[in-house]
Image (cartoon, rainbow, N blue to C red; front, side, top):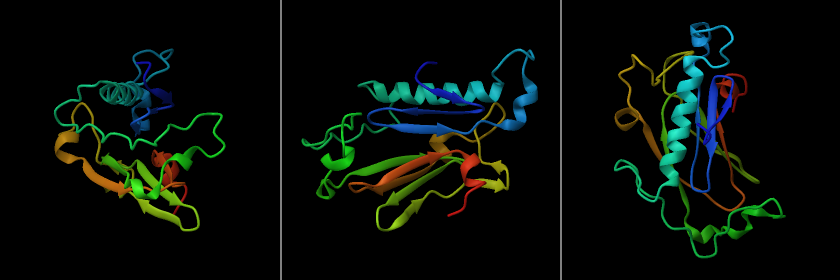
Length: 172
């Protein structure tokens, strides 16, 4: 599961053409098989989910339910550590859009210089700390229940994906 990064119960991945975050269920921490096991079932599920999402975007043959991303404009270059201005190769005329499949209480924030917050995904919850979620006994499925967004982005926009650890403690 090396295509995802585990952070506590949560996991994420970042690729050239996609990124994702999965919020683990902290309440499952007591369900470890052995006290020496560093991973709960929740941590394993979130990491596995992000690993296989990342893997899907690394393949030239996308699963049927995923549309391949549009080809990058000819002048698009990925940011590198040496870039002084990594976003400078994306022009506003490119009409770039970020495609999002959102489920649960993780959040996507879009910030624009000089404007501030221009987009925030809506949490999908039954009640506080009871999000719509995937799990062994859940009837929720990404294909049927994920909320799609298509978000226009501009040069210098900053996108932040975060679990509810951020949105429960910081407010817009």
